[in-house]
Length: 343
Ligand code: UD1
Image: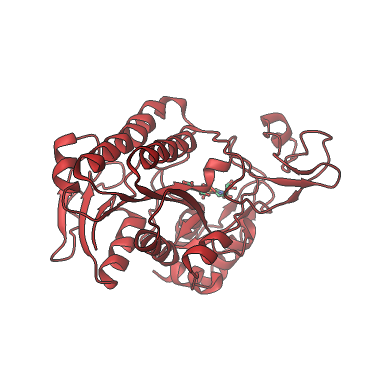
């Protein structure tokens, strides 16, 4: 296939590009090289034979030039980050919502009918909890007062009891709680509209916490694994927020790349969402300990600090992707953390 890969110069994009080429596809990359991500716009060049358009998704003419002649699009270009600053809302809405709307319109003009969209687990908000009395419930949001008092577990919204964690399936209600999450939900909704109107196919991949070689460090986009690695390299202890028992599913970027390319190659009808996680959730404390051990560094320090807006646990059920698209994650957690530590 000939595939347009947007955001191909980014952390996940470079791995997806490598996977596409490995599997014999022709690739055209479009990336704006945003200065907040790419401090040096000349630092990355695509491999030989890959057409490269340096352009913003909202540039209609550039989009038309990049989209035409492709069999499919993988859309990763986006403003990422935590999305908690209300002042950033216009940038999320413009870059992510409007950029995606422009892409969909350009695909319709060029009759390109397959889209693989990078979405995120943040679309589920606090996800799901299981109450001994009320079953599966949406945990109540956590407020500053209870977090400051060290009450980190969000209670049952009905009776206030402690919840067990439940895995989130794709049909769980969407509950975006920040600007980034809202823009990911908007992208999914625009893509679903486009699929219905044009007969196109969309696979929306809800990525979990992606880590691995090339992860951004020391930028607003740095995820916790990169932050801990940088601290350990400076000879400092990784600072683990809350009590360190918050759970995430850390999924390796090569597994994310293979999921993305498999979805692009195989999903060919209607709109379908897929969670992309390793299937083995870990606590943030465990992850810090694994990195500290790999780097022979200071033991993690559990600080009790918190970031208002962080979700407590978010763990996916990724069985749909395994069953329907025959995807299998291959990188073991300990090996992946060791590789990250050594890069
Ligand atoms: C991350 C991604 C988000 C993605 C989501 C998917 C980043 C910056 N965010 O959000 O784009 O949509 O996964 O599930 O990559 N923590 C510490 N110490 C620190 C920093 C963070 O303990 O110095 C804790 C946080 O409190 C949180 C956890 O680590 O509990 C994860 O934080 P982070 O890596 O920022 O990711 P998410 O909020 O899960």
